[in-house]
Length: 304
Image (tube, rainbow, N blue to C red; front, side, top):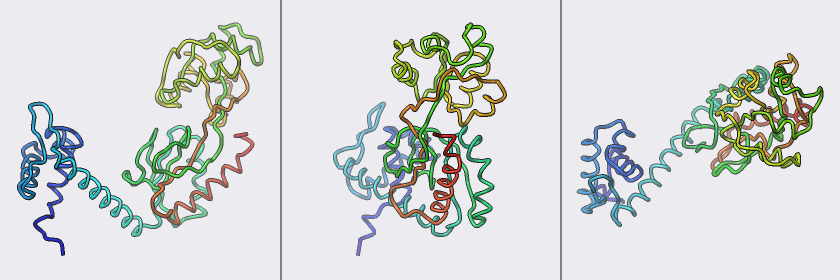
């Protein structure tokens, strides 16, 4: 049996872990929603219990001692295991719940309009949506699956390819008219001279597009945006030309709010369904995955 005198309280363990991770008692207190003195007392109690100094307290920073580094690694592993166990228990209790992280524009324009079909097929599943951009720890965030645009280099996650990402140079009709471009697709060199709009997550996309078109490299984008929907609105407003996925902006193209200035181009990225590598996929995740692949097949002509 393990002697209880070697087992710390959960409060002390969390306080010590936060101080080591963040490098200060002040930051740890903010992270844990406690006072600085409360965090200090918890760490002091842990040191007294172990009979070892775990931290070197400087005027501006806190660093672990050699013993503290060993204990911090073990504490972090224990806390992560407990968190994963809690998520597994919650998943077992709520097998019909599916928490899905989606991209804002892809979610509102492509996925959400199709969700009624999924719910008609699987009324036993309760969907919870969260909007996320970029990578994150699926298990730590309690997310069952995420739709990701880019490359499948996501640590700790399994990637299922949905379809290739293809973009097309688009602009507002007024900007095209002001540039005195001929009807149809103008030469890529003329397109490269227009003001360029880009995404923060894809700052090099215009460089790769000009290289693919055998056009000399262009200067850096004139404006950069965090969200695809905002980028598209700036394009519609005539602020510049953007590389946009045509399958998400069919309505704007049909209405004449946007004009395509070249053929669609495969940028080497894709859309992926990401699921945690650890643990088995639940029934709700498998049902959603199979349904999603059916929807992708239904729209296969759009993505080709």
